Image (cartoon, rainbow, N blue to C red):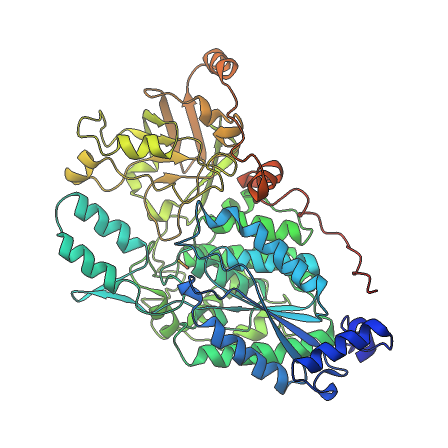
Length: 575
Ligand code: FES
């Protein structure tokens, strides 16, 4: 049994338990809030970091869920306080939520540090909120439990099941090809998002929620519960109960987040057919925890783990089906011979304890190892003269013919250039061309938006082409699909080789060989490099300027250089 903290060892004791003028002020202000001394005395203060907002529809329910967490905290003998944080609504925040992930991480860390908080429940789910919250909690170092928002219900239209993002792309191409009407398109708009909760395909949200669970940062099974299921508020109340004991046990994130826990999470990522975005976030989270991690670890693990979750875009179903099939506990039990079952979790028990006895109820949804959804790996990391520090691809979501391919490039200087060109009826393009987008990376876009699934040129869409090779330094939504090579590092904006690609250059991609090559002679590349002029910085001032100065490249997890190291920061002085 873990030794328990004493009340006077709580962080909050410095604010509330001593007898001086300042603590008088703190206590009198709590009484101003209608609380009595007995409500807080000797109790852990639990901060509920809530990413609810009026324009974050994935998180609409988190306002109510915070009350469920509070119910659990009170019940277990804690004192809950809710602290609102940046909501990072994926559809609305421009140019990209990725620009602000680190801001949420900073906000989380500093909210916890500057207040009398002993432990935290982190409420989030929409893509960047999961890594942002967890990165902040790691760096702060108080016990923390992540309560995922959960996926929304399935979309529906004309008897078809619709998946977030994935079906928007699909039917947009059908509309561009003239195969559905404006009226039908409007019906799809009304049917694709039916409830609060995150995207319900295996997008970045579902991937990151599952990764958080596999890391041991959530209660068992939490990541699969649909947002609208009554199990969801029950899970939140349980998280509230559990965090109080985590504080007494001093079960901090770095005790959970070991190298073995990260390997477990990457194995789960592969078995889920997870989003390529997770690579950046996992690298960032691991480095926050003081652990070495790079993209290559994903490539190594992807070779041993097939895709087992039959969820779009790698599979055909949705997260609601995955929950009914048994959820992540069942998938992890299916994978258990590949996992380190001794890893500690927020429950105080091991991953092995947490998944024991979990059953797969629908074997078409969660496949056995010997009958995977796809034998193509979920992630491949390629290197070569076009991406010296690496780039990534999701082979399981691409047409197999494109996994080994050589063709001429069509190079676009930026997103607007690309968007104009692909609509041209006279664009000289064949299905064998390779589309190249520059200036879409961490500094160049800025914020490395999800532009990596470049649209197939209109004339090819009309001819029935649905996939072709595309290369960029952008990311791609986890809901996207196709032969898209992403995260090219270093990015073109800082003079990575992608900056020097010209239309007509031959590019060769060999995914099984993990190689990408620009067939341009070295002396010609040197000539182009010498003629290249670094673009002007994007921001004259403000957060964007801070971001541009300190952001790391994709292979480094896109963290700020001053946030990444694990190091003790003094507790705030109280005067
Ligand atoms: Fe929030 Fe997809 S838009 S998870």
